[in-house]
Image (tube, rainbow, N blue to C red; front, side, top):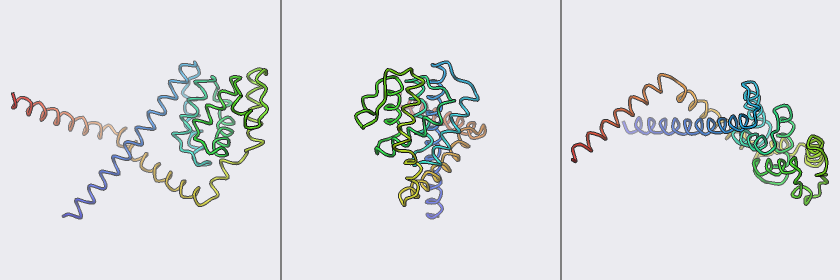
Amino acid sequence: ADMVKRAFSELIDVMKEGVAQAAAQEVAENALANAMRARGIWTKAAMESAKQLAVETSKLTLFTDDQALAAQRLLISLTGLTQRMMPETIKATANLAQALGVDLETAARTVSNSINGHSRALNMLGFTIDDALPKAKRLEQVLGQINDRFGGAAQGALNTYAGSTTQLRKAWDDLLKATGKFITESPVMREILDAITKIFNRWADAIENSRG
């Protein structure tokens, strides 16, 4: 009996973790969608493209899809970058992050500042970004110089023991996330959760009334 209880408890813990991860991804996706809407560039196709780019980034780098979603949100919010230029920009941003040993969002902020004509951080690292250039040309220069210096850094990091273990952990997290997404999006599960919530509320009311 104890073994069954432990197994059931562990299953519940896995489900909780899956739901938490699915909820975190939903928050990241909603934040990205809101950034797109604020810039007037949201479409269903653009959103799906952004989500697919996040998945691809997770497969080809040590960064997670949630981190890639957050980086895209930041780039869009700060620069108005469209989805057409996003794949190359995220690739360069990931290379910069990996080479400098910083998180993807920090690198995205640095890239965004340079795109916007504030390249002090990159130029202090030896880059030669001309802030007087038009924005489109400046973006081209930023991406080109990052990839000239750090091209392949993000994907190359996978070819290590640490990279292999990170990818394994992400694969497990993706499985948990898929489980959690099924739970949160299933109409049956929602009905069950709503029913349990109502029961708990009735119990709470009953206890409160009995104290009065």
